[in-house]
Each structure stands twice: as C-alpha cells, then as structure tokens.
Length: 270
Image 1 (tube, one colour):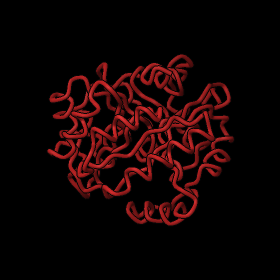
Image 2 (cartoon, helix red, strand yellow):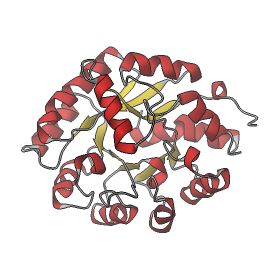
Image 3 (spheres, one colour):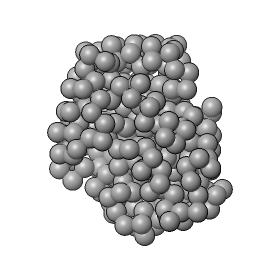
Image 4 (cartoon, one colour):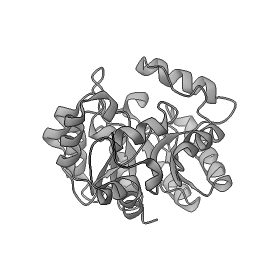
C-alpha cells in the first residue's frame, strides 16, 4: 500500500477525451469496441470528466478528440475551443488529419484559438506516424505546437515505437507526448528504441495496469521521472484507480510531484 494519497499532490491529467453531447455516448461505445474493452464511463462528456476527476481533485486536464476523417477537423477544434472557454482548467489539444486540405492554415487557426497542441491517433486514422501525410503535419507544427500521439498496438502497424524513433530523428525540434509509456502493447519495443530527450515526454495512461509493478517501474526509470506525466485516458479508466496504481510503484514524493504536475507545467510552459 502506498504511503502517499492522491490528495497529497497537485494533479494534472495529461490524457483525456471529451466529445460533443450529441455523440458522446456513441463515441465512447466505439472506442470500447475498437479495443474490445469495457469503458469505465459510459459517456465521454466534459461534465462527467469533471465529476470523475473530482475524486482526486485534479486541477488541470488535457482534453482532446480525434479526427478520424479530414472533414471532422474544423468542427472538433471548434468544440475543443468552446469547452476550454467554459472550463479554464482545460488544456485543449486540437485535431488534425494528414489528408486535411489546409493543414498550415488550420495550424495557424489552432494557435490563434489558444489551443496548446495537437492530438493524433494513427490507429484510428489508419495513417502511420512516419507516413508522408503525417510528415505534412509535423512540418506545420514543428517548433510551434506539441503533438500527443497514441503509441503502439499489437494488431496494427501504424504507431510502432520504431516509427516514432524515426520521426524524432527527422524532426529534431518536434515536441512529442508519447502516450501509454511509449507503446501500448509494445513496451519492450518502446524500451529498446525510445529514450528521454528535451522534446519527448511519456504519459502513464492505459499501461501501468497492464504490466507488473516491476515492469512499470523499470520502464519509467528507463525514461526518467522527469519525462513522465500522469494520464487517465478518460473515459476508459477510473481516475482514482489510475492515480492509486501509480502511487503503488514506490517513487519518492518529489518524483511523484513531477509526474503528477511538475513535468506537464514545464513541458507546456503553463
């Protein structure tokens, strides 16, 4: 049992999904079907997010949604902007798609709206993260906005850690937040090819519960506690349980301060 409790820390959740009210139930169900998992929350809506995170008194939330087709980009970004206007505690990450016709123009608009980054999910979008269409996005955001990337899937080869290693080499000024400790279901491969650096960070969601405590500690130590951030993947998992699982790993108080919020503040300059 951990000697620390979630309330001992200022908490930033650096990976949550929200959807417009009219589609939030359908979108949540579809995510569960994609992963063949039972979603903890039936509705991925902002009020449910706030209620869920109140269990651990979360202060800030990175909120995002994914454009699975190009025509969704503008409407998703307008939605995320509107939610951030209502909830100043939200850190909005915009959607982009490699086949969107005016990536550069939308990036300018995203920055003007005050959104803080981009979310890509290569497996949902069926676009490899090292493909020419993905590279168009990196060219437009490098040095301007960070990108939150879903990483790793044993069923597909769109987001393999080796691809991210190639992207980081080709775009040395691209800031990346690699989800799921760098490789959902591909952690051995992630450990082999991904390493901490000035421009990459890793979130903890949808990972710690899927491996032994010893494996989780080893992987976080591999990257370094200065490079990992707390995330829940709401509405997939329960924030309180996610925080408690992280706290069971035996890091120091100072290390947990960094993982729960300090690293996020430094990475996003907030």
